[in-house]
Length: 161
Image (cartoon, rainbow, N blue to C red; front, side, top):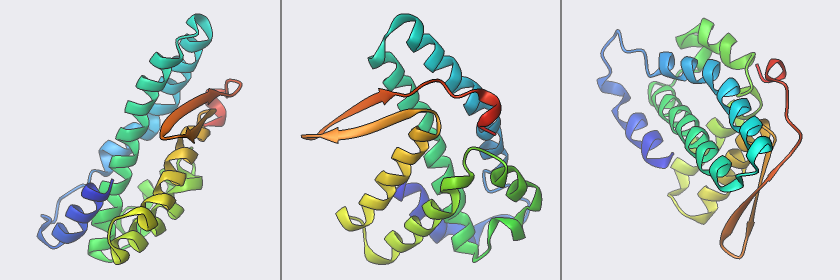
């Protein structure tokens, strides 16, 4: 996330005027992720493969959060909020499962950029990642350097958008 954010924040000045800032990709993720995560959780309840669920959900959530960092880096580099760049995308994010963590993640990325990478900057982002997992009923816990996932009851896809 830090690399995506920092690189795009620094290079925002060089964007071509017709750049979509990866907004189309983020929009596609917002539409596809709830169903994909629901499918992974349903499969978990069928076969109890917690390792498989964790691996697949980690890939999906990591991809989402990298896309968020990518977009936020460009927005901060341009000094523009999402609503000013794309009202339609702003509405899509506001009405999606991402809404509860969009602004806090943006704040944490900007604050971390100002203080240098390290534990102080990383802790808030780890909470944001935990919150992204929790959105889909997956609770992460860190114990003795290991990460564990607990599966909560299945959320209905219609409640995730």
